[in-house]
Length: 87
Image 1: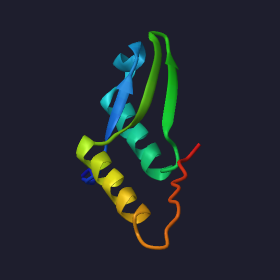
Image 2: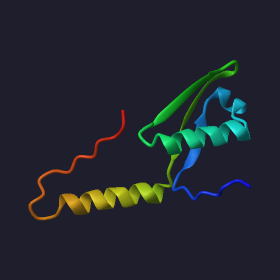
Image 3: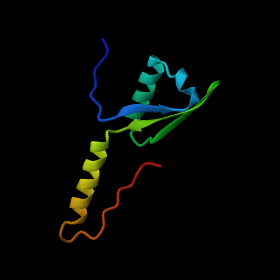
């Protein structure tokens, strides 16, 4: 029986090669992103063209992140907040 995991993101595939993303490949790509959280983008070349694979978060999550950043940056004694993203 497959394990059901709740994620705050969904897999986003873009490009002409997207038709090659089968349910099995989709699950493997999700697992890769789970195991390698620092990975921002996966690019796959197919015989139909390229496909870019990434995480897609709901806009309300991004708004919440921006609000938290603003709250922290406004705290007394805080001069700067820098978030480092995976490269």
